[in-house]
Every structure is written in C-alpha cells, then in structure tokens.
Length: 196
Image (cartoon, rainbow, N blue to C red; front, side, top):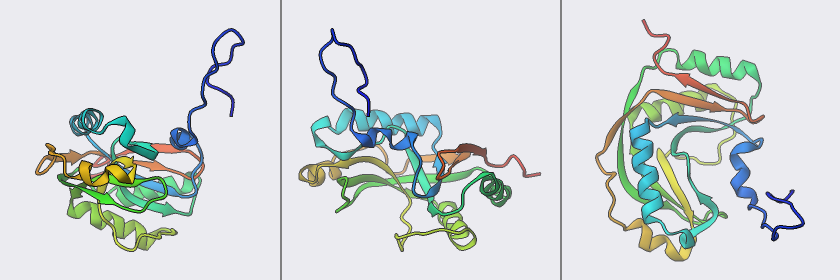
C-alpha cells in the first residue's frame, strides 16, 4: 500500500490500517443493509464520537456510517442479483424500527462489538425471506437486528456497554435499503416506490 502522502521534504506519514479501507474493497459476500434516516444516523454518530474514547477502539475500528444489516452472506453477484432483490423488496413499504439497549458481541477477532439493539418485526421477516430465497452462506444461526457502534479493545467493553445513552425507545422509519455486492457494486433501493 502506498503512503497517503509522499514527499521527500515532508516527514514520513504512517499508512492507514487496512480495516479503514473495508468499505472501498471487494467483499467475500454480498449484503443488504437498512439505511437509517438522517436524524437517527446523526444521533448515533454524535453519541459514538462523544462517548467512546479513541483509545478504547479495537482493530475493527469505529462505525462511521450507521446501518442495520438485514442479510449478510449472499453468494450471488452481478446485475441480476440486484434486480432480484429490487423485485423481492417491491412489496415492502417504509417500516418502523425501535432502538433498544447497548449490548456486546464478544470474542470477535477485530474486538468486542458494541451494538445498539434494534427491534422490528419487518427486519426479521426480511432476513428470513432473503435467507430462504437467495443463495447465501451464513455462519450466524440466530439473527439479532442491531447497529454497530464500534469494535472495542475488550479491556473497555464492560465499562462502555453500561454507559448511559439516549437510544432506548427511540423510533424511526426505514425508507431505504442498500445492496452491496461482493464486487463492490452498491445500489440504494427506496422502499415503497413500486407500491400502488
């Protein structure tokens, strides 16, 4: 990887860790994400930046684009799959979500994952629909809808999961989803565009 800045007259610049480039590269699997409305994204991002110290961040980094994974593990790729996903979503309109408590997924190689629980029957139905009807590999047997705040150094996990926060009971409406293919192709799909 080339340094971010190269000049013989300037001091050496450290290369950014590879995990900062995850969103710019090809992925092992495709995924479908629920995009949060701006007010929810702002609330989460501001709290994240103001309450999770940088020294607590693990290898996986801090989430800078809050979202909810509907389904990860798609093994199909190319333009055909995005059309099939649009067709499957054509009967779904905007749907409500309710934020819950902070929680942790412990033991990840990139650090303990600090999350906000997300409650929504529609998210679970969508996950089930895409799991049952699209080629996929999924190593997570139970779907727990959530949004990731950061990957933590485990030494910080217990302290940060118990922080006071403004999320519990906050209600928002999801109006868009994003398809992210294995090849790096991304497409935003507005919900309800095909409904009468």
